[in-house]
Every structure is written in C-alpha cells, then in structure tokens.
Image (cartoon, rainbow, N blue to C red; front, side):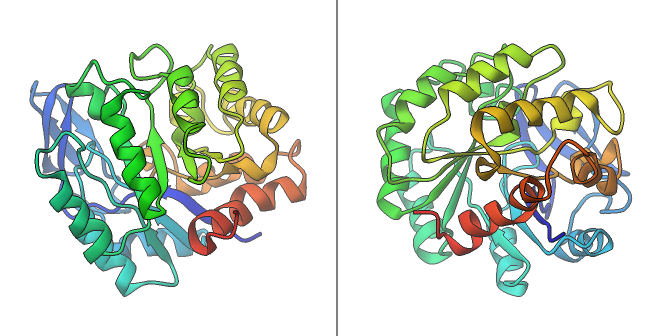
Amino acid sequence: MKIIDGHAHLVQTIAGFTAKGELRACGGGYASNGAGERIFMIPPQLGETTVTPEALLAVMDDCQVEKAVLLQGTYFGFQNDYTSEAVKKYPSRFIGAAAYDPFCAQKDAIRAHLFDELQFKILKLEVSGGCGLSSYHPDLNLDGEQMHEVYRDAARRGLTLVMDIGRPGMQCWQVDALAQAVRRYPEMHFVICHLTAPQLGDGEKLKYALDKLCLDNVWFDLAALCSNTRPEAYPYPTARRYVHDALNILGSERLIWGSDIPSTMTRDSYRHLIDYLALDPALSTEEKENIFYKNALKLYFENTLF
C-alpha cells in the first residue's frame, strides 16, 4: 500500500513559543520553556536539536512512505525558509506549508515573501492554546475579522489552509465559529489537524465537531490521535474508534493519515503510528488507500479535488 505522511515537521532549530514562553533546545532532543520545564521533542532516530530532510527521509524510507507534507507551527518555531529549501531539494518527496503570525504589523511583507517569492501553496495556522495563536492571543475568534482577513488573503491566493484548532475544552476549540467561517469560502480547501484533537472520553464531542464541519471543502488529518489518547498504547483502541466514527460521518474521502513526527516518535515508533490503522481489520482496502495515499495526493500534490 502506498503511503503519504500528511503531517510531518522539519526542524532547523527549535525556536518555539508557547503559553509558557519560549522553547529552546537544551540537548539530547530536549527543549526548555520559559517556565524552566524540560520537554522531550526530538527522538534519537531523527536528531538531537534538528530534524533534517535527510533524517526524515531515512525514517520514511524505512517504512516505505513515499511522500510527506511538511507543516509548521509555533511548537518548534516557524521553519519557512528551511522547509522551502527541503522542497526544492526533494520535490518528488516533499510539499511544504508556510506559517506566519497574522498579528504581525508587517504581515503583508511576510506574505509577499512566503507566497510570492517562495511560492508556497499551503498555509498552516496553529491556533491551539498550548502553543498556537490562542496561547498569547486568548480572545482570538475564528469567525472574527482578524481571522477573516487571513482567510480572504488565502482564498485570493488560491491556498489550501491547514488549521490546528486545539483540543476540546480549550477556548480556541471553536467548532461552530469555524464552520460558520468556512462556509464563506466555498472555493478554498480547509484541512483540520488531529481530527479536532479528541482526548480520551471526548467521543461525543468529536461526533459533534465532525457533524458541524462535515462540509464539501473540509478535510481532516489524523495526526497525533495516538498521542492524544494517552495513556493507551499500541494498537490504540480509542484512536481507532475515533477514526471509525469519522468514517461513519465523513466517509474515507475526507481523511488523511499523518504522523506529526518528530514529537510523536518520542512516545512510539513510526511503524506503530502507521500500523495502528494500516493493520486495522475494520477498515477496508479502499478506505485505507484513501486515508493513507489518495486523499493527500489529490489535495496537496495534485490539487485536483475541485
């Protein structure tokens, strides 16, 4: 079975910013935040303070993963130029998303660099309250004018917009507001990360979110479902059940497998992050082919959906 990783990260240097301030590498794959806490972020297989394109490709090749979508966020820090360089060096293996902070006073100059000069066709917005826009803009409204300015610009440029809206219980988990906003841009593709990030016990909240966001121009990646249902271990029964629920509501054409490495590989192997679904007997061959390959190929690499 062919596989595309729809949610992976490169790291030139850890330069994150979170609800607890800055994140900076302190050796051995760890970073320290502004509150003095140490966080394990990069597994030994991928590096110590960086994740190079070659390190990522080696892990992908070991598991026969053909391509990857390189996303970004404020957890590791924006890696725009590094991502662009990787895509140019390995165009048959990678496609990249740009990231920026829409609260920057000079955002127009940033967007000109990212989308006119570097020619990114995907925008990733990290909204989550732990390490995204809501961590330092707690009143952010996904249906507010500040965000609609971002949506309008992305729509005008023909970008695919990938969004992490945090997890249930966070102020940023604004499913109703997002659904209302998305309806105003039917020409634009939206991808919601982590299947809206349900935790253990969030099954009904997940169904509510998927019902609200079951729209013609919305897809969902499945990255980090295993991590978000901790402390369960492989083969992650609750993560599997959440995918089954999503299939029942959305169908297999709206789901994209992703790993969210490197951070998820600090808890389990890349192989397990694939096999919990690839070896799930409840999924048909057609469903697996859509989730692991066809949807990401059409949406990100071919842009042939509509």
